[in-house]
Length: 622
Image 1 (cartoon, rainbow, N blue to C red):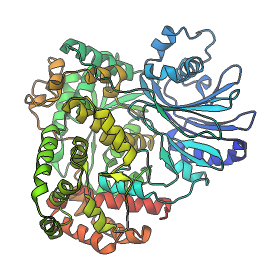
Image 2 (image 1 turned 180 degrees about the vertical axis):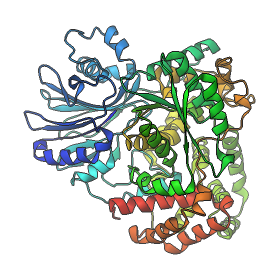
Image 3 (image 1 turned 60 degrees about the vertical axis):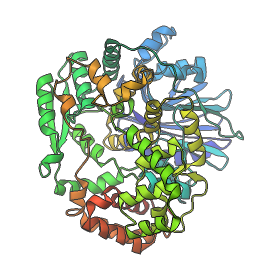
């Protein structure tokens, strides 16, 4: 796990200092070392910050060069099946100078190019420079666990693991992208390929780009989720899951497991204790002031049952106020989520870990969000709204413009009548009219229901010929998990130089889950019944009976108490930071939340607060 940066073009060698600045901005991603490569032709500059996880020796340092010095490689991530690939493709063991995954992956890419990417089981973003051909190969993993941002400047392609690094280079403008801002307000995170910056794009997941100067930037997908269905026994599902966790335990440094007390994290802790020779360390966050939101008792019982070394992190309102500034600074893009991951990552780092396993992905693969019924009901209601007069619709909205309920009603009238639009409605923070109320001059003609038009069309194409349950899985994986959860997990973990791994997104296991019959993600009565069936006898018997809580902090309480003053101050300043916003409706939203938090919900004012702090920190302009 590391940070990468680079610049490719006819005069790239002139920008060595810009790459150095990008590396300096990503020190937290790789405190174990940092080097720069300048190609003999001067057409490529690569930078790398190292967080040493596999092969801690100097032989694994990057940028890594092959013996002929034709190739230079920078890589952020982990390849969990590199030993298997090394044997399968007869990578020359005697010719290897290191024992980790980086050199093996570089050799395979030299030999097979992007054709090897579907076989890589891991999380990654990398750049491979070919000095002889004068071109670079960029790629990103299937689900987008590792970030990669790109931009063009002065005839060059510039890329980095973080937006803040690109900004620090001095080569990128600080102008806000209206489409990125619109999607942020709609979903609490900017939807790819846009970012909040006009000139910066998120490199798409499961894609590769081979680029040389004066060529168009056209990334191509190397993987497409299969539509194949087959019979999968509980034993096969369990064994594949155990193998995934075992692969994710590979490490030359201390490792822990995040344990919330829910099904997904418990399953990982259970599998880890069976696959690992030593004692597994588990961590969980508890809320002494809001015990009803804490699963601490369940986590303690699970840790005791599996014999883990368990540590609790107590989080109070005053403690939250103390870490808030640092957590906001850790956001590489503004987000309405992520603070919880910052807190638990900080605790993992303080406990001496460089790696932690997370239960992220289980809800997406096994239908843990119970979304199917809501989506179908939304579609049925949407058909009924055709008979409601527009004046009545407007009257209802203006009576209570900022309530979550009115936002859903607004979407019934304005979203497209499609399955994808019904999915999008379930995740929206602000409806179209609510956005127009707080930012009336913000225009988003090139968007459909909060998504960039091209992105909307790509997802609709992905849905073709699939059943309802698979559509929901792919929607959640691409929009919510891919654009919020994974992005926040990377940013908040790396803020503490912590590598967070996600066993549920293992290539073999996620492929198996995609092949499950549709009924596997239907309530019977538990939405994850198929996974629980596979792990019967492994997990605690009462686990399925516990109510789903998720890993959510008590923001609504803190925002009305310890955080009240700082949030109000930021909302008042937001129109100055970004003139697209209007002060009066922002304060109206805030006052409505303070009176009736259950109607407005904390995520809406928090989303605007996080945006305001981000704009101030990075000095973005309209």
